[in-house]
Image (tube, rainbow, N blue to C red; front, side, top):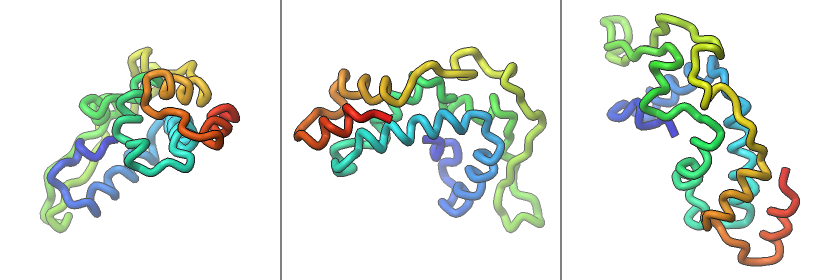
Length: 142
């Protein structure tokens, strides 16, 4: 979801930077909620039948995930240019550490449940109940 923030950098560097960001992310519970909903929806479907990018387009804003364009600023991160001792790799600095009060209301909390996200995805046609096992998975919820 946030890979584009670091476009142009090698995947190895992006992984390191995202690991740092996620270690301090205040909204890990939202990602757990999204992961559970996606897992239910994906079920026995192939990735092409339940594309992750489309799932994020539908559900990320529902639960108030910070949009990629705002992520670094709202979380207090700055990507700094490489220094002579950094092997030519950029690094992250954090001029300030935000608290929950520093975030817009839409992303501070969510009232959606896993079941509601799954139901919404069915309602908008992201996936369809194609067989009885998929229907049973959806009915079980979280």
